[in-house]
Length: 376
Ligand SMILES: *Cc1c(COP(=O)(O)O)cnc(C)c1O
Ligand SMILES: [Zn+2]
Image 1: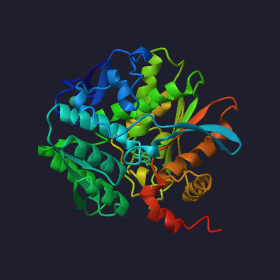
Image 2 (image 1 turned 180 degrees about the horizontal axis):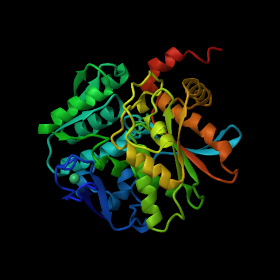
Image 3 (image 1 turned 90 degrees about the vertical axis):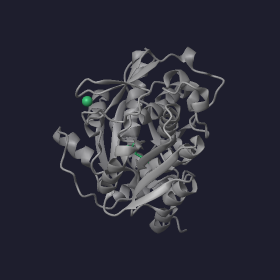
Image 4 (image 1 turned 135 degrees about the vertical axis):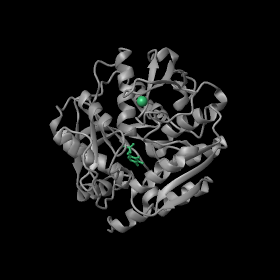
């Protein structure tokens, strides 16, 4: 497979080896691919994300950073009397699915000789980027909102990232990073399209793991859309390759407290006014102004899915019930389970639904501790 960067706005194209993360016109870049996915080119002897190296933009084996990402389990689970499938991404090296995006992005960054990067994150993306940068010997600066959870900060610092706290909200943190990106490579999980080449491998794995069982729908949490868009890209490749008959319906879940995509979906417009997010347990999707908002809405629409939101109480009870069954997940991931509960009754019984458990509960122990449930 061959790759390039493309700007839909001004039609400019860049080689994938150029150190760009957005177009000179200021617009978002997307990765364009030449060639199709095929199962014969999967390196079946290799476990993990790099078994799909033929479809990833990192050429040299030495740049394929390995911390044990990918090849996560897909397990059946009975939810409200219905069978669903859960892709267990909380078992990733840094505890969230963001490792997939970081592995490919940082691998490519290393390949083109970048030695210093900036990123902004309030948690898991920062941890993933910090870990992969550490492994690749790349200096890493991460802008974080002052409100960032202590556990995630400790994790980023332990990997050796330099942390720059920014007072104010998440948007102000992003602005500070954008400013720093004027003279440093921006390894942004929202702007940089290489990140999505990593998250798309979840779709490849689902194909291999479900074998002949057709997948009808996926319910996943959405903030910046690296998961929704990664799935959309991956499943579109599988569709183009004739390996699936149609895209699974993608359902994007947001928290009631911060739901710009829900507003955009209902009112069929983008952008929507930047909202002031209310506090939510689902910190991983508390993004008030996702830069790829329009793309997310278009992807969901093309798949035949929808955007929906869940309330704090629904997140809390999903988390509590899942923990009671042995699955300790981040509240953000529990939001997707709460979303599954809304979508399941709308799906015919014979249709297959899957979700992604995006992050490990150990990342948010202090939040979970405050929730104080299961005191029998
Ligand atoms: C980042 C993240 C999400 C949401 O992903 P987006 O790419 O922002 O849509 C969901 N769950 C967890 C645990 C995350 O870290
Ligand atoms: Zn452009």
